[in-house]
Image 1: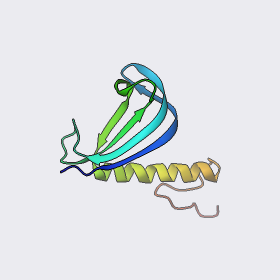
Image 2: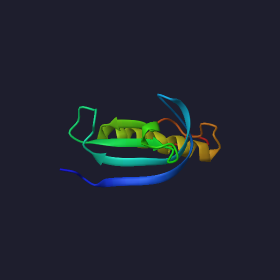
Image 3: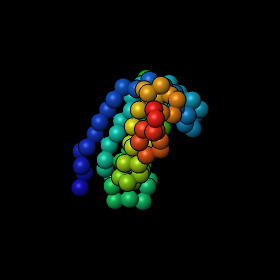
Image 4: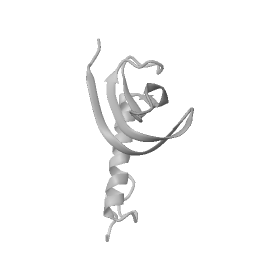
Length: 99
């Protein structure tokens, strides 16, 4: 059964695929049947440059559990960067004592 879960966001950055580095314009996040990973369903991340066509995408298919871990790691890294990029947070998201 298809889930039809799909999110598309504009992004700014670079990604490296089989053809080398490309400018990224969008990220597509979906939850559905993977094409390659051996899961019934997976979170799929596609990083694309809409001007270059579908063949120049950087794709990931990961388990829901792995996606949760990745989401948490991203949130912690963002929080540290916004805090000043000086490691004001311990691994796992807690603030260091005395800071």
